[in-house]
Image (cartoon, rainbow, N blue to C red; front, side, top):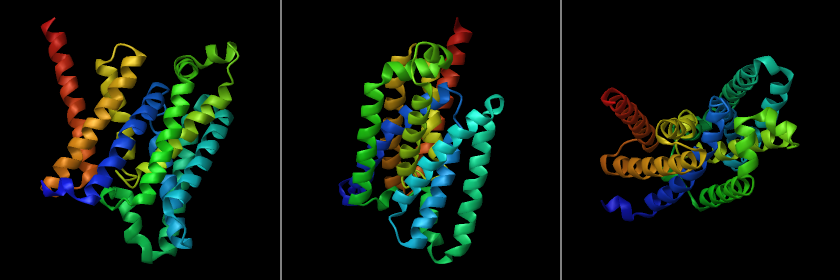
Length: 269
């Protein structure tokens, strides 16, 4: 248990706790709006930005963040262009992100090992700058959600009614996309671009099983996200496992247990 008192583990725990709040919260809005795949899309685009950051010698997370925000605007633009086929926007942007990332990988073979840490997560390598960036994003996301929770609730469950009531639907759609981009950009160093979508969607999937209201869903996703991060880091630290993979597998285990429990309750009634 000496690892718990080490400085790198404490930094990892702080970063994980911050992301354990914001990622499930944003994931809840995405799942309820049937946009869960946007997490994969923005994470792949972020990796292209990270690769460019290493190539030009700029803070990788910052470049990844810029790429993700640009991609979020592009997704919204394409969603409007293909109203009847909104999922096309996600597929198009994801394809572009993967293509650009692969191109940048071939241009900078010397940094491929560094980029791999962003693909699979490297939470133990978080530094003070990373924590400040993650903390800043957490504050922005929480303030935005807290101050606009009623509007976001209406947009999420009935976009047409929100438009009729006079809410600027386009603004809120863009806001949700940008906030998601911010969260994903700072999450990829913690759980990795290949796993970040799980941290967005699985807590939300769990909340849909046990929560009976939107308020309960918000509380549930945060609790599940935080428990998975803390438990995953402790298990990974003690048994020398991959932290990101451990966190995601714990989330899947929780989801399966809840599904089994729900089936048992229904069978008993």
